[in-house]
Length: 243
Image 1 (cartoon, helix red, strand yellow):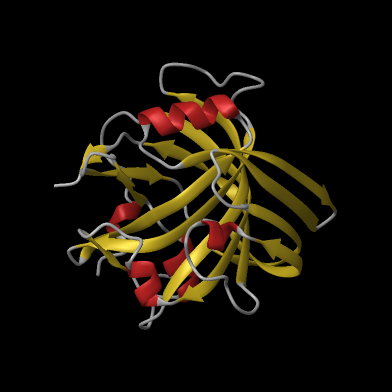
Image 2 (spheres, rainbow, N blue to C red; image 1 turned 90 degrees about the vertical axis):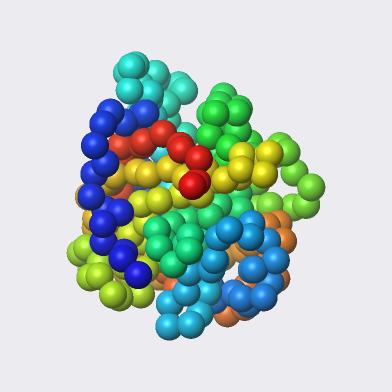
């Protein structure tokens, strides 16, 4: 499967711009049958060496803006937390399927739910950093049917650089396509563009989370695979119907 060409910048004008900062990539292996039951039929599970994964990714959004406007202080910067897995469409176009996206800015949640067909939730979030140690907390407020919380404390480790194609790190981090449910039986796909993530090792010092269970999956077992990135600047391109 081609995992390289999605990293090429699309032609045309982006719909908007974002800076993704202080990303922690937490991943666990997940039961394929349990995962399959939560995905729309046209999409297939993307696996690495026959194994499927669920990811929990807390980070910070900065300078979020549409193409026609500069970022707005007080609106354009906020923490975010995604729960995701990896899919493809008919053996091509590997991408991300989001079970949830929590954000600490209500206006961003409302815009994304209405305009991007993504399952955004409003949450109380806090990030503190001291030296190379980071503490991230999130508690979902709306809409919520079951507890959805995260508390993670981690130490940023040595630099790895950009992930090499074909490696596990590349499979997890270098994702440029997303799929979204239009809510009327239609699926959409969208693309982002950024330079490859500068990755670091990360040591998880403490972790409590219910985000995976809130997505309808079994609670993850064991320690997660952890990576950190200081971030990338992102061009976001508009959604289009999946053909």
